[in-house]
Length: 285
Image 1 (cartoon, one colour):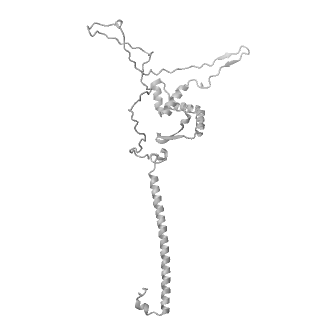
Image 2 (cartoon, helix red, strand yellow):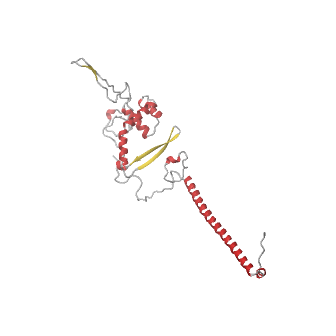
Image 3 (tube, rainbow, N blue to C red):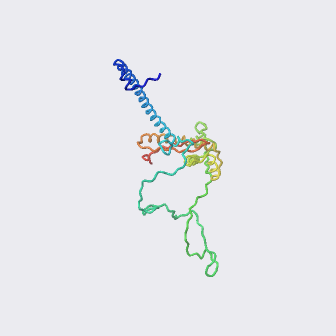
């Protein structure tokens, strides 16, 4: 029901008890309205706080979505296959100009190729005809020579095969036949040497050459056919032989205060794998 609008004349016509009732009603109504206003202000503050919290959360989530190994402390393995696209390098060297010319400096010990006093082979070149009279020249007419040396690689040597013979001896005292033991490293009638295993391990682990390509290298250079599975077995055995050394290095690294850690990603059989490295300059040989 719509309440009647108060005017000065209507209020002047009211008696004192009616005025008191009207004032009491208005006061109660005002208190009710004030309570409602307080509730609305409280709700408004709560909504503002909630909105600020949600805005901060959205900002954090957007920042996390944009993080990768190149703009945060996350390791490259966390990128997975979603590596960041190539972009312009933002880092700049803090080193100022030294005022020196580029290249080797004065007094720097270089690595220039120098001739040796005892070459492995000599090739003699003689002129065949005189440029003055066209007479024929022979090596006996030589009076001097100039020297130039070419440094190259010797052809890969053939396999060096060592045969171990465990002899049997007859004891003259009691007639017992005693056969010598083979060395502990010689376990099969025919096997590859430790040098071949070491070379395979070096090429595969240090230079990341797959076993099938390693087999091709040994075939092309040394004329030996080694199955990739055999190479993998040789490399695994070589790793086991270095276990004591690796454990000792790990023990030494655990006590170093400052360490360098890194990881490199590469693909194996279509999957991402990670090579982890831990080192310290204080353990240099």
